[in-house]
Image (cartoon, rainbow, N blue to C red):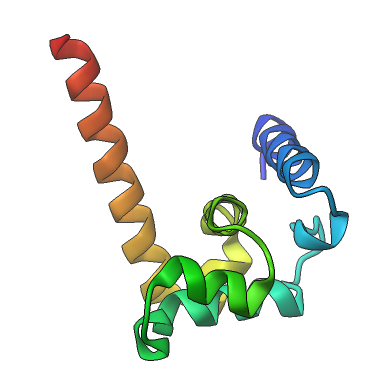
Length: 112
């Protein structure tokens, strides 16, 4: 991990903590292993459709935090090699979707 990437990860961790009001919700640890909560988030994202109902409500019920916080934590996990090692197909698919959405937003901005 580069110093710039590390600083960016630290910034996203701080903003999640500030928005959630609890450091417990943002366990984006700098260690080389995923926390239990991080693994649970990846497992949920891989199989959320099995829970039925709206995904936002399932996120609130399962993790006790908002969908916004969930997606911020999930987005941070996508950049970690530990997440890639834990759920390679999921992480690669979500990275592709993120890149596609980013390109689409960039193209819309250039058209405007």
